[in-house]
Image (cartoon, rainbow, N blue to C red; front, side, top):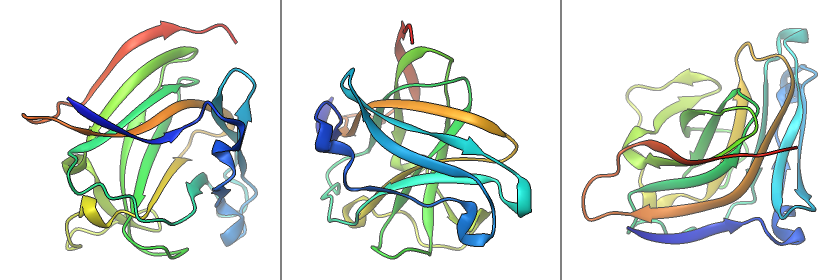
Length: 184
């Protein structure tokens, strides 16, 4: 399997191009941030609230051409809190519009590697599926983001060591492997 690192969060400046986009844009009160942890990874953390019809917190990188046309999917190396997160991809540099997303579960305090094939991403606009949208074109991806939503209220914390593109001679099977217990 061939990999290409997209974001290596071992360096303190690795989180500088990431911006929060929380439900405050529609009157909610959820909040999130992405910071570099002294242990050498990024942390997407905050509080999710359903107050004022809110219910999502997200973070995304600044738009740039990622050149992922020769790859089959995305690999994440994460340590979660037992909640479900979404990986979101956008083919434009805009603030609002069509996103392609796929959810992945986490285990509290466990580092795992998650591989998500591009074919698993489904189009969405403001939380609703868009069944007739064009297929995700990996060569056109310009933004990567993470989101927590739905009824998972309260504090959340997702540690991220790596986001990479992966290519395989065969098809990529979604997997979560390499689990390591982490003491926080």
